[in-house]
Length: 429
Image (cartoon, rainbow, N blue to C red; front, side, top):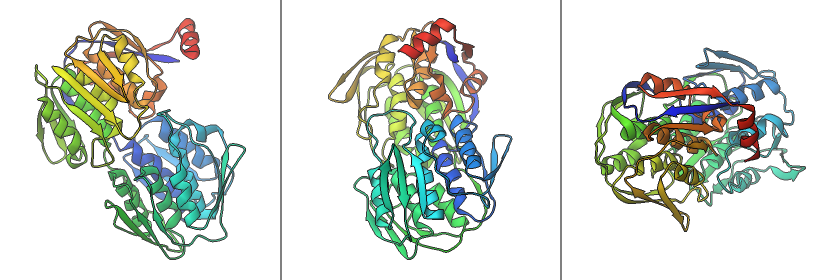
């Protein structure tokens, strides 16, 4: 087991390239099994979630060729509908996309309840509601979800909440169903458009993606294709926040600025200088930052995945800032860790209230989830002294080569093996 060590206070400068979107990749790989021939997905992020999904694909009979950890070719011709009740599916939440994909391909699936970061209750009731509307019988047996259908038929499905996971999962199940499916109150995230683009390239008939009403006309067959993943807006946002926190001038390559409008608006409100180009962002930090208020909302609102990294930056702002996460109200576990680093933050009625500016101090902290880990890395870069971050397996789920990328910008950050004593303390925490 390893930890990340950060020697804070070193200014960042230079250029960084953003990888393909993690939240697209984890849906695109399961989606590929719906094809009858080879699917190639390019621009993959080299992260542990992709490795786990590739391994699951091999477990169910797919021939998987991963090239330079950037491109994957999936041949689904020998895939079998075998149960996936536990094991790898419990290592990441996105394993639930095999529910929709397997149901769409085989009219049956057995999938264990998904794992991933614990961010409070994240039920899959909207997914199940969609599957049942399409004609599947869904039961929970011995901790696994069983989906069975004689035939899938198009239906009108209204989502009670605009869930990204449910929207994608229902699309996966519906593209080969008989007749027309209409998803109302659908989520609008760019990653949904990315998945729909793959499915359309495979021969699916999908309209309205990016709006709150998606219409799908079922087809009998889907064929292979090539697809390039969109840039990761959350990775881009994380590095933009780091640039604002401790950078001088950083150019961020391979971004779609339109996907980051809510963050860029808030960074501008903070006082950060931003120049936008076609697929680049130039971030120039300022000595004085203003306090701001944030409320996370479904896209195109402020993303919940960036509220934790932004919390670290707001410790530098003058005055009182407030963050309200309306998506995952329990996504505040990073607050206690930031307090260990001298942050002046309190939690009231599910809101984080940050008073600044304060000088963060190095400390031993633990990443409770993926984006909390990113927040602690940014805090460590800002802090005086040395910060040791445990639980880095969470960070590696979503950020490719984060230490190497930051070193290239001038950070003093590295990985170290944990001592036996540290391992015991971490496991007992």
